[in-house]
Length: 69
Picture 1 (cartoon, rainbow, N blue to C red):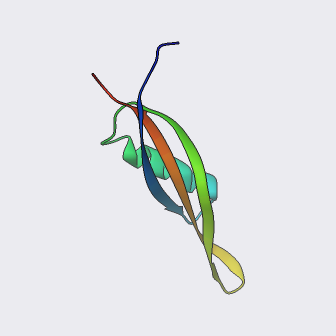
Picture 2 (picture 1 turned 60 degrees about the horizontal axis):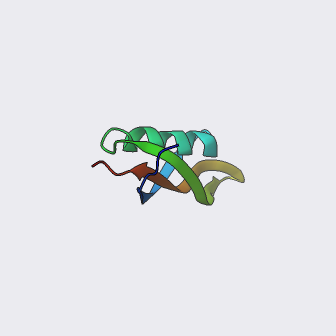
């Protein structure tokens, strides 16, 4: 395994479906502009409740990516 230097960014994804979907959306969106994403860590999960039901998930994650050069 080669040695890497990582940079980390914090993102918050949202979904009406699930916390898993919120995570996937955040990573997929970030991968459009951030190269070499290698890992993620869930920092916080929260949601919005309407009429006694979960209406919306928000998940804050940290993603790590390798620096080039």
